[in-house]
Length: 359
Image (cartoon, rainbow, N blue to C red; front, side):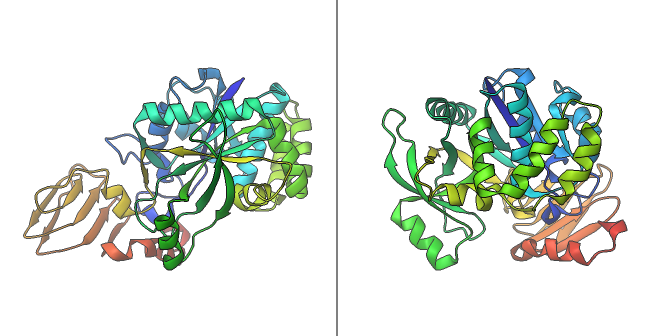
């Protein structure tokens, strides 16, 4: 049976102050008045049956998600007692699904990307399902065509095509966030794609790989799975999960698996428009610019200003500028951010300097 899980556990500190502890970035209505998670959930239409759709997120966000995303039952929210990175979010999902359906094949999808067109995205995910159904030990990732030598994304190197599933290819290796010169070489070679952070696994195959490459997490998940659906479920989850090693699925599973002769790691090229909404400049790209390149969410007025991104949660608060260039302004009732557009990545550093009440 096909399933799909959206990972929605990120904190999104680079999108502070709209993204805050009680409402992380995937739940902020940034795009056409809807949250990134809402858009991610919409992409599941036509892919998997509604009962087989899951969201893995912080337990504290359960009610917020149920208010935002209609059509999900509380049982379809997999609540983490604390964040332990992507390996454990995927492993927890695999353990739960394997208990319900030993033959489960599931897609792992992201909550912080905008992806179009839907038809191409869906076709690629279906190819991923077919690859894993044909060989349950396979692990599938999806590669995005690089448009510039990004140093903030991981890369996958493509090998030989997989007969019957072209243009899917064998994966030679994963490279996490290379330097600029190396990233340029990758883009120019034509052999590399951006690692999308999306995958398809069989639940049984993933748990077997977990035992091989991350035994500490595997032992913890076995305890959680044994208690799942029993009166001790929450107690066991709350005591075991916070102690699991905090590591990404790329580092813990995909990289070592790509060098293991017994596991075939595949990459499906995904020829889509893909926007990682991980900064205020990226969020600005979702807004149509005016004639001077200014992009505004909420009331604004700009005089002789160019390429200003202004964002306001308050429909009764007007943001104005005079003679500004390449500036980001974000206003919320709690805090206001002003910074040069070329320094938006430092918002995360700023966030770390703040007292908890302002985070």
